[in-house]
Amino acid sequence: MSTGRLPVDSPMNLQHIPYHFRNEDADKSALELVEALSEEWKTAEGPVEFVRFTDGITNTLTKATKRRRGRSSSEVDEEAVLIRAYGEGTDVLIDRERELRAHNLLANVGLAPPLLAKFDNGIMYRFIQGSVCTPEDLRKPEVYRAVAKRLGQWHGVLPISAITSTPQLNDSPMDKHCAPRDGKQRRPAPNTWTVMQQWIDALPRGTEKERERNEMLDNELDWLSKKLGDTPGLDGKDYIFGHCDLLSGNVIIQSMPTSKRTNGHIDEDAVSFIDYEYATPSPAAFDIANHFAEWAGFECDHGAVPTESQRLDFLKHYVGSFRYHSISDADTQAIDVDLRKDLDQLHEQVDLFRGVPGFYWGIWSLIQATISQIDFDYASYADLRLGEYWNWKAEWDGSRKREGRDLPLRERRWAER
Image 1 (tube, helix red, strand yellow):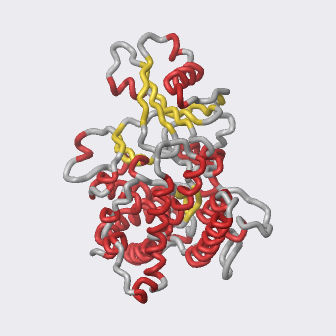
Image 2 (cartoon, helix red, strand yellow):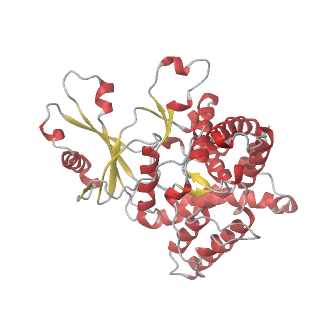
């Protein structure tokens, strides 16, 4: 169980290397960075080798290893460094200072690899040995149960104070998503809704069509924020430390003894989450619904999202872990835990939030379509993700039934037992 407040150190004294990573000459850039990180990368015997990862659609990621004589592959990997160069123009999408604070907190409590340095357009951190999940992996019971337990730990124990600020009250579009409603406390800043507001505000508005689109998205966000922004959380935690990007490529099954993978079980300690660019205070139901959406992968295979029985199985393991990690020893006598009630509440809330990830990533994709130099069809991806939102909205307001339209595949799959 939780034993009190966690340390929240500042990453401001992290080593800064004044260097700009160049994607067109990635290996040369990576070599110069690791040599600047430590002289041993240049002087110690053995070649420096690089592996370029291409799973992401925002950043470029390079693994650097030093092949010292007599060391096993596992020993080499223990000293490996990951170099993550930010995508061009992504500062409009991501608060890099908040990302560093999030990563630093997680590293301090053993939930993230240690940060090693930052450079002009990226960061360097220790490599985690293990296997990157695929969307197919996320659907395996032994994997999703371990993910559920790890996510319950995140939400139960991590303080949102590590990734919040205290802006002055004003009449800005951002503040309307933080102001108290119906006697509730002021929402933390930033939060899921303020992030989406920033993204909408960053969209191009040079044409009448673009302005009309942005106004429509503004109105939808206001509606969502009012309807779902004050969703009550377990133990009064309406907003938790959300990963908010728990796609398959950000879930690592670490190398571990075979004994921990027997009988269809993976120990939760063997699961790690990486990449904390979008870590933001959010309702727990959003973070979970967003993860469920990622079972479909980048191809948006809507027939792969979890059925009701799979969601309930996931949530059962999540709730148990959340309760274990969120209740300190001093609280055990004061809080009456009703796991069945928790499960029912969260199941209903995740169901309500199932369309919000499509809206979130749809806006994100509209921005990427204007700034990204990565070879990915962001415009089509935006259409797919926003389509998920509109299909959910049509179920919410009953318009699909009134108009006699067929139930879309994603909604049909979600309703399966």
